[in-house]
Amino acid sequence: AAFEALNKEGVQVHRRPVRAVNFNSLGSQLCTASEDGTAKVFDLGTGKLLKEVDHNSTIWWADFSQDGELFCTCSDDRSVRVYDCEQWELQEMFGHGLPVKSASFASGTLATASGDAFLRIFNLDSGREVAKHKHGGWVISVRFSHDGSWVASGSADKWLRVFDAKDGYIVFKHLFAGLVTCVDFSKQNLLCATTTRPEDGIYVVDVQNGKRVQIIEQKAPALSARFSPDGETVLSVSRHGVQIYEVSSGKLLQSFPHEVHVNYASMRKDGLVCSCADDGRLRFFGAPSLQLPQLETTT
Image 1 (tube, rainbow, N blue to C red):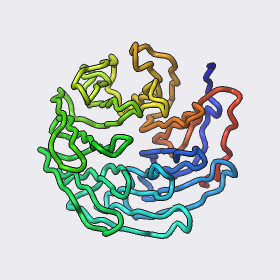
Image 2 (tube, one colour):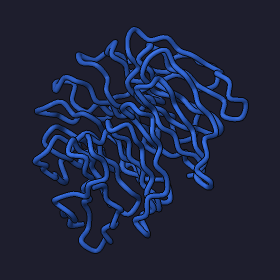
Image 3 (cartoon, helix red, strand yellow):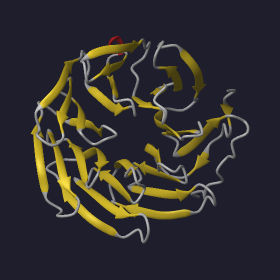
């Protein structure tokens, strides 16, 4: 399918760099996290701003639960906040020893990655911490597998780890040359990871048998990598833009250069890609037939 930039200039949704952008599973909503201290949720049908969360300090991550009923934010203020997506009311707030970089939902639980070197799992019904795993440095990224049975972490101690979410034992681990900056699972249960060193490439592994599936070579470090919803491609971000690779071959399929530093990108089921950048803007890419969301802008 032909891909193109649907709005090269981007849409201004924050005053400062945008660190994360994620679609809900239906593709009807989009959330952002920014260094301006706010996170926003937009309705992609109407473009309306549904919710704005203010932490008064950098928000590193915002994402939805798989059923689209909850939304979380992770901030420099050492908290993770969880809201419901009906009334947009605060449901839970979890404190940490240092800033929180990332979080991931799975059936009634939330895993968090913090600078205090712990991966934690909270039960959302009781609000209690049910597990905590010590790392040798900042935990930068965390992700549950789609069925919730595993939880992966990427850390500044250069290890990629996968834990059994229920029993806590380590299912898989791998040591890299660089700090592990982003982890993600495909629906086929493959795991990808990026690090701060280009020689690590984008690493794709089948956790079940421990076999490496692919190392996608990189000239510059990939800042993040996410699987597409169908798991067939990997969407990666480098300083210069967004790339889409085929998982099976490692082949570059699409490249979207940016003239500004990009931080993260996500893909919707229909192939719509959204990137977020240091200029506070979101940019959309995809097939020309896709409707470009007209989001409420920030002046």
